[in-house]
Image 1 (cartoon, rainbow, N blue to C red):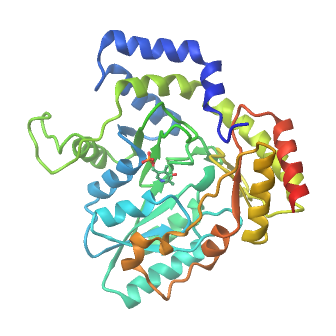
Image 2 (cartoon, rainbow, N blue to C red):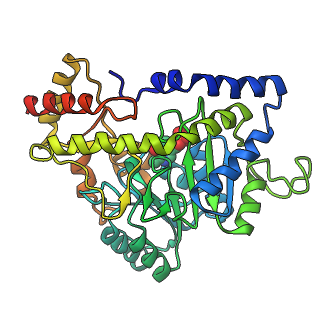
Image 3 (cartoon, rainbow, N blue to C red):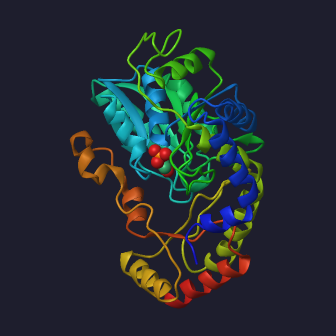
Length: 373
Ligand SMILES: *Cc1c(COP(=O)(O)O)cnc(C)c1O
């Protein structure tokens, strides 16, 4: 059994994907091929925003957004305490200060009450300017954008949606990566929409930011690559990855539908025994991960062990909250506690989740978990 079965996905769609890759090889248009432009158009249309700019990976996508907004020294950027390292790393790269915010126990996403408190704290007790909220769509579920938007308006803060795990999710009829002033995603192979290497994309409705993003990702280009009007980076999605993604985009919604059936089965069998994920009303998760919480680390360890003996893989996302990472020690605000993030990271476990396992597999895994606690 695979944690995320990329092999089966490839075997099932092999003909189309191989043809798409061979076309690029024949055209030898490895950088800036027409497939890249076509993908950007299709992604923008899928998400329902005006502009999509592809880039080399999801971390660069976040950094490019912060560059475009001119975020730097003296700026406070609010980041959930429970996420992948990148969400906070890019803030530090830009010389700004990450302020880690506790999460909601049910959704694992940023707690909007804690966010409000953190913004007030920064205003009252520091010299930092509150500038950006990095709202992460963790494990596939969009963050609580109705309330995040209210706060952003109240304090005049920008929303950067880190949709690396949330691509394909929805609130009502609105798709993930349309909620931030700028939104980003990652095409790392195991993400909901993954390519066959590294890749990322940035989304926005704002024309001026879109133009800057296009410049920053190609060495700060002006008229062309050899006219440089700002200091940028080299961050592009290559044509082979774009060709693969164009094919995979066709069946993404189908995969997400299947993942939702798997998730429903897990929840049905597990909710009386462990803390299962809660999806907010009117929200569709793209299920980058299905993550449960046990009573404590000891119970988690024994479950991992028992599953392993049955050949069932599992993974801990994430073992350490951001504020406890060594790299972030210089940024600690002792008054802003993240007790939920600390608790969840000591008890959480992510289970196999992909469109190519059966409902029966989910039932079998759930049974083994119930037996081990
Ligand atoms: C994967 C991920 C990223 C980074 O994406 P890369 O393409 O690996 O750089 C950023 N944020 C979150 C929440 C992620 O899961």
